[in-house]
Image 1 (cartoon, one colour):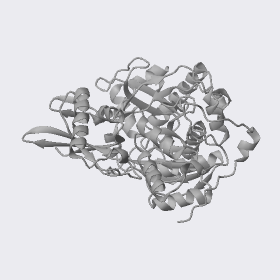
Image 2 (spheres, helix red, strand yellow):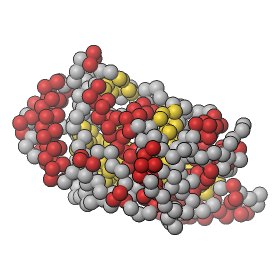
Image 3 (cartoon, one colour):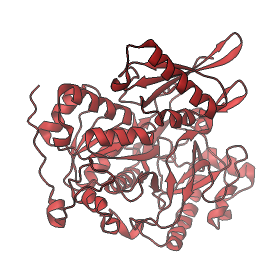
Image 4 (tube, rainbow, N blue to C red):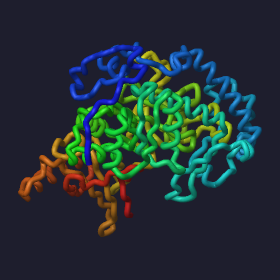
Length: 479
C-alpha cells in the first residue's frame, strides 16, 4: 500500500477566520489544524463558532419558556394521536391542559423500552405511514427491535441537532468526514451523515470494516474528520501503526465517537497516538438517535443537551422521583418536537448528573456528564453491587494494560464468579511467568480493593481484546 503523507488543504472557513495557534502545553501532540481547534488550543473559547447562537446561547428563562410552550403542544399532540398515551393519561386522570409548568411533566407516564416492543412495529406512531420518510430500528438482539419513524420535519430537527454537536466538536464547513459506522437500520450512520452535510461538510460514506482501506482513504481523500466507535478508532490507529503510517502527518484532526462508552483513558490514548481531538456524543434510537447531546471544546467531559428539542429530568432509578441538580440519577428524556413517534418521559436507564451553570464556550444549554454506567449494567456478585465503570477506573490507573477490557460472569459450584480480561500493552509483555503473574496478582488486588469482592484476572496479549465497528460488548454474563 502506497501512502503519500500529505496534508489536507485548509477549509474556506479557516481562510476567512485566519486563526493560527500552537498546541497547548497540556496536549502537545494534538493537532490544531482548523480554526476551531486553534481557538480552543489558545483558550479562546468564547470565539469558537456556534451553529445556532440564537438558540444555543439563549437566556435560561427564555429557554425554559420555549420548552414549556413546546411541551404543552407536544403533550396535546401525543394525547390526540397516540392511543397508548391517551389511555395511560386517562387512567392517571391527566389531561393536556394540566401541563402548566415544566415541573408538571412529572404528571405524565414514564415510557421504557418494553412499551416500544409491546407496540411493535407501528403502535406508537402518531402519523399515517405515508408521512414517514425514513425508518430505523435497533438490532433486536434481546427481543423485538425498537422501530422508529421520522417525518420530514423530524429529519430536519435531527440534522440540526447533529450539525450543532459536530460544530461543538471542532468540525467546520468544508471538512471532509469519513464514516466508519455501518449504515443500515442503525441510527448512528445516517444521523451523523445528514447533520454533517447540513453543516457543509463533504461526506465520505466508507462504512464499517476493511481497515486498511479506511487508512488509505484518509490519505487519498484528505479526510479531516473520522466518525467511529472508540474501539474501532483504536483499531484503525493500531493497524496504521503496523503499516508504518505517520498519524502525526495525516490530514485527520477530529474524531467523532459514539455507539459505545469511551473511557477517558481510551480517548486520551487515541488522541496521543493519532494526533487528533476526540469528542463523544450521546443519543438513543428511542428518542431520535445521536444528537441529544455532545461535547464542546471548552468542556471535554460534559455534553451540552439540545434543550430546545429535549426536556431532561434526572430521577432516582428506584423511586422515579427527581434528584437535586448535580446529583447522580437516571436520565429521563421527553422529545419536544417529534411528529412520527412522540415519546413521553423516556427512561434511558443511563446514570448521569446534569449541570446548568454557564459554560466557557458561551452556550447556555445544560451539560450532562458522560454516561459511565447504566441502572441495568449493575452486576450482583455474591451479594455485592459491581458496575463495569468501577473496573474500568481501576484498569485505567494501571500503566501496563490498555483501557480495553472484557468481563465474564459465570456460576461455579453454585457461586457467582467474576473474571476480568485485560489487555497487555506491547511494552509490558514479558516471557517471564513470574513477572506476568505478579502483574496479574497486583491487578486482582487493586480490583478487590475497589469492588470489595474477589475476582480472577486474565492477562490478554496485545490486540487480544476485540475491536469492533459496532457496539463493544464489555460484559458476558453466563449465569
